[in-house]
Length: 421
Ligand code: EPU
Image 1 (tube, rainbow, N blue to C red):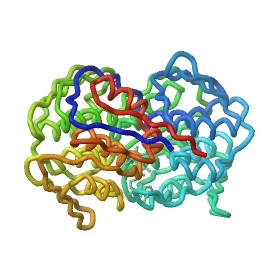
Image 2 (image 1 turned 90 degrees about the vertical axis):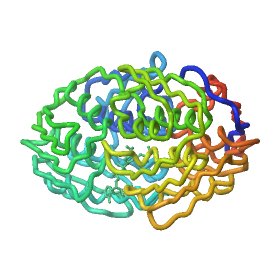
Image 3 (image 1 turned 180 degrees about the vertical axis):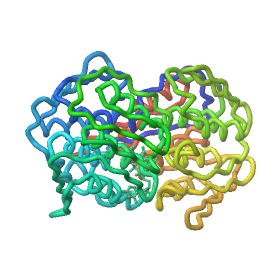
Image 4 (image 1 turned 30 degrees about the horizontal axis):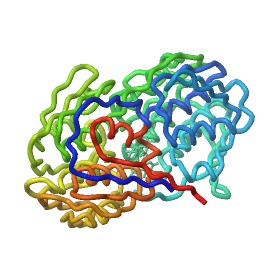
């Protein structure tokens, strides 16, 4: 397993090109199952989760081909299997996103149940509830969700909580269903808007995406389309936390600041000066950060996927920050690793109290999930001395060439390749 070695203390200066959003690309890749025609995608990030999804689609018979960097074509004209096996689903929960499209186009799907994960239990009961309301017969057998429906029928579905992939699965199912589906309490994340925009280009009839009430009028079939994946707001936010913690002046290119309001507000409160254009963000930091408390909620509030990174910045801030994690029940795994670097953090249930200290000290730490890994990188960049981060395969699932991008802006960071054997 590869590890990262960071020598902290360098200020960050220069430009970073932001990649396409992982969490937009994953459902969009699965949307290829909805048509026999070809999808032409651009700004597709090169990530482990993307290659896992392509592997999953390939074993179903979907053909994919990379063109110029970040360009991908997908064709699902010859689907031969309607199954998502445990081996792939267990490494990536987003595999559940094939359920809606398979059921909608082929009337059948067998998808392994994902099981728990490092950040929480993450059940998929709402995906199942919604598809059942659309007329699917669903049973759980031998660890698989087995779903059947002649043709899905439009329904009004109100999920018990706001769910991102739940909304995406139901949206992809509804576009080929008979009649009108109304998704109430729908997620409003920009990645859902991006998926809906692709589906509309494919011939779907959707209104209200980006709000909590999405109306879908099903069509008989969808066709091919060209689409550019929206910028990764979490990657952009992560780089801005890095400059907030380490100091410096960076400009992010190909970013989508209009999707980052809550994060940009908090960074400004912490003392980072932010300037934005339509697709760029400049973050400039020349002082010790000020502590900023925040609560994670669904979009447009502060995202859970930025909680660990902004916590890392708070560990060296002036003051005390109270951080509430309201989306996942176990998303403080980075705390014990940050403590190994000297951070002063207390946890009480879903609240963390971070008392800022002047400086972290480098240590050997272990990445436990994707965003936890990013927080350790930020901590390492700001710490004195050397930080070694082990198990960075988590980072590779969701950040494209992170250490290369950081080196380009002056960080002292090296990847040590280790043979799995
Ligand atoms: N939930 C249920 N039942 C369901 C669905 C969700 O109880 O059927 C609960 C979850 O356990 C959680 C809450 O509802 O407590 C919200 O979960 P959601 O379904 O919104 O999460 P997700 O769709 O599984 C996506 C992202 C996550 C991101 C969350 C929240 C993708 C592929 N994943 O997950 O991204 O944290 O939304 O915004 O889009 C990451 O990128 O690091 C990541 C974990």
